[in-house]
Image 1 (cartoon, protein in one colour):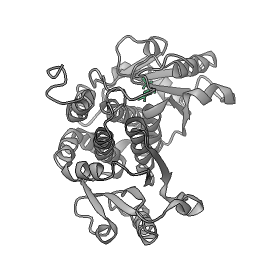
Image 2: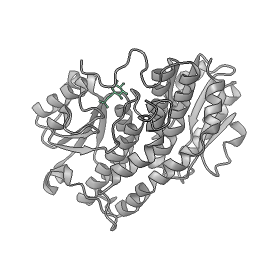
Image 3: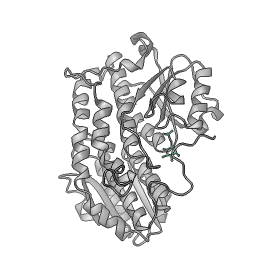
Image 4: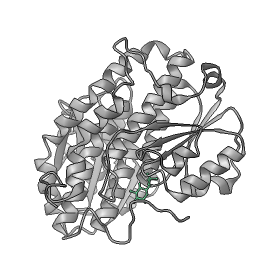
Amino acid sequence: SAAEKGGHDYFMLKEIAEQPKAVADTLLGRLTPQGRLRLDEMRLSHDELREIDKIVIIACGSAFYAGLTAKYAIEHWTRIPCEVELSSEFRYRDPILNRATLVIAISQSGETMDTLMALRHAREQRARVLAICNTNGSTIPRESDAVLYTHAGPEVGVAATKTFLTQVVACYLIGLYLAQVRESKFGDEVAAEVDQLDRMPAAVRAVLGTMADIRALARELATAKSVLFIGRHVGYPVALEGALKLKELAYMHAEAFAAGELKHGPIALIEEGLPVVVVVPPRGRDVLHDKIVSNVQEIRARGARTIVLAEEGDESVVPWADTLIRLPRVPTLLQPLVATVPLQIFACELAMARGNDVDQPRNLAKSVTVE
Ligand code: G6P
């Protein structure tokens, strides 16, 4: 009913709107005013946490892209090597696991069979398994050594939205907690990062308030054949998630590339009028930002219709952007939490313009309990 959807036409729209609260709820009780993290759920002693020499994230679908995003943050903060693998591929490659491996299984439903089988394989090899899950008491947390719940609330729309954001947040909490416990080189900066994380619900609320242009664009592109997405660093998994949303909801060909790979092949796809979404990282001291600005120039010169997501105040992209979507200014590693939101809305609006049921896309199930 309309009441269940909180006045929205679809659960998905309601769930997109709930993201500031979902992120706040996932942080709730886990940050202390002293800028420390309290993750009692980890259930591994500090000694055990110090012994970890490798992290392996296993997940499917959007949860996999949350894991890909987390790898950048976890390796940066902890200096522990972190691999991310699709659950359905994991056990078939005979992965190297032992007591010092921390396997993080990310699953909204906690029932995804591919992820469950991968985690069983990990436990057989004596790895420690930590679940990130949104569903209390589901199978994956029950079979794990410990669980960190994302407190996103029930998600009805088949395509993940608020659970994706909260999965990223949960992974970041684990990364920062490991940095804190292990007193990594980065340990001193944990307080500053915790403070930044605490500001994310407001940043997500801000981005939700500025979505009129992306909605209008989506309606204009309703008959497009294909949309490409490019990004670098954490902008790359954001691009992947944006493309997945478009496939799932709009039944449209969409593909994401690491922007640096364009020149190694995909740039041949660019033709007059092809929509290309570009996720531009914040202007930092590094070369990341400038590299992507050149990518935007390259594709625009070849006729692409550029849809550029860039932070407030970044004027460098203005001449090359057919449509410019502004993002709040946040640190690079946290940008996925704001950059994903316009891409969810883009896919949802485009799918509605094509007459699709965005809550129940064809051929998909919310939780896939077969391998
Ligand atoms: C299904 C859903 C996706 C979801 C994936 C993983 O395919 O349609 O939206 O990302 O499963 O689900 P999980 O519950 O394990 O996060």
